[in-house]
Length: 89
Image (tube, rainbow, N blue to C red):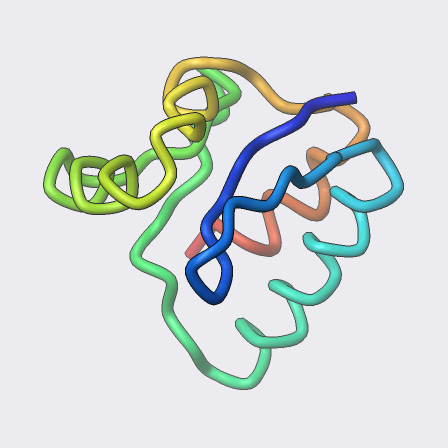
């Protein structure tokens, strides 16, 4: 289980990310992508990480510094199919 702190309506809130919540998040992203929205992100099969431009990461990390771990850490391998749908092509 992973936790992160985000600011919501001026308040800091702790988010608990377990495998099931990550799967739900992936499913939501896939539905949005299938509607024709481009995230600007890609899945790096070799590193097993999310690829994005340095500018994208810098802007996101200003908002959620705890997301730094996702820049270099791999994600659950059983989500490979979902990640391919989200980030390939």
